[in-house]
Image (cartoon, rainbow, N blue to C red):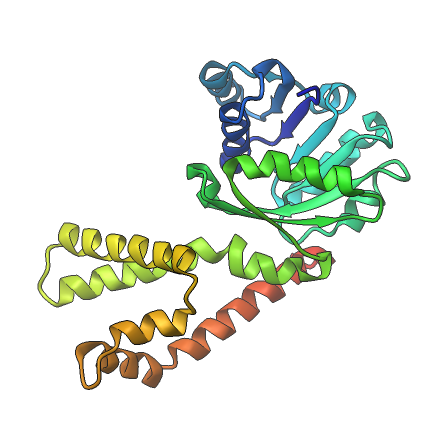
Length: 269
């Protein structure tokens, strides 16, 4: 590998990318990172052997810049980077809701920008990273993004117009599952189980069900019907879920997440 990559604003996702690239065979000498706090920077340097640099230094020396700052911090970061980023450098944005045009307008004309929305399972190499090309990004740039983010899970290309929907489904998706597990654990306690046993039962059910969804090739309706015996316990539970509008609530929740992503993009956040 001859490319140098810098991760700017190295929080949890940025650290996941660094560690994933190292596990994938990248040399620490080919990687750089930036971090605001000195304690955090020292921690990352000791853990991974990767050099901490300033944002300006990263812009000058790295071939690919991965911007993992929060959406509200992106404008200030781009103002700092713009004088130092030549038009042939790949810039990857991992900020929710920020369109590639926001970056392109603030960087040198012709700068290739790729937008990526990943999620927190990247921390355990089970992430889902959704990749979209900006105006000047070419196939080689998309492949480079796939190489980097593929180290922490799966990647999927979509048109940028679909990024807000992908953010609602995948970027925020793990939180919905954690919420459901929390609620189902509480239900287990209500039914008389100790919290630790209820937690273990629900988590293993979730792991097993997700593995079946991924590996069986079956439609989720088919898998659900296989568990739903006529007049049995499962169909009674599903009836209550339908009576309480759980399906409609999920649809509304994902629409709300999509709309919030659009608000962030328009600067109304």
